[in-house]
Image 1 (cartoon, rainbow, N blue to C red):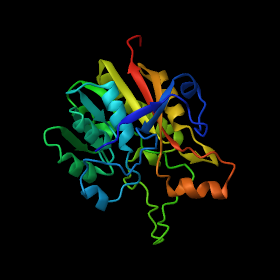
Image 2: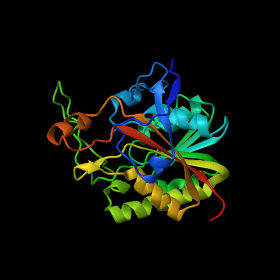
Image 3: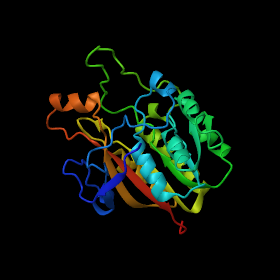
Length: 279
């Protein structure tokens, strides 16, 4: 049984960002009802197929569960244009919403997960920029984790016991992560603009992002994307929520030992944007 989500209104002292969004729109931290952190391993209602197949970092289900329940209604259409293993789609189905997503790299995992909820989820394979028009119905909520730009400090994913190296990365040549910053942001905003255009008038657009580290300092991907989205679309940021990225990754454990002065991002940032009609 999934633990109830409680909200702490106090921003953790080790949260890494103090941008205008996090400073002015912070609404709370998501915790278990016993006051502990939710674990990324708490994935209830997912296929055993995903345990046997590699994924860079599956989405923490708690953020998706919380945001979908709070910012949508039963029977709504929930869309993730970069679906990954299908976390947003599964959490939508569990909450009696319809889920529809697009995935380039990990389509098989998302597809296997979706089979557990027949008639509730549709997964399209391909590049979201080319496939977004496959979604025919009006969208009530877009919720997504963007592909991570590959120019961050390299991660470490070796198994401490076996020393097996899991430091693989994206492989599909069409993945936006391979592009330099200028192209990456341009293409991401084009995609998100298309998503915004398809949103219902009272719809929400939500990003869930764990900021990476670049050049030995936090790279505020959530802030950079939010600023560009607000500038180029009719979306306006209204809420910021966070939850701990727990358990910590190998990178989060080892990087501070090499660079103790670097403030490692330890939280997922949930950026909530609402569609407005003055653009």
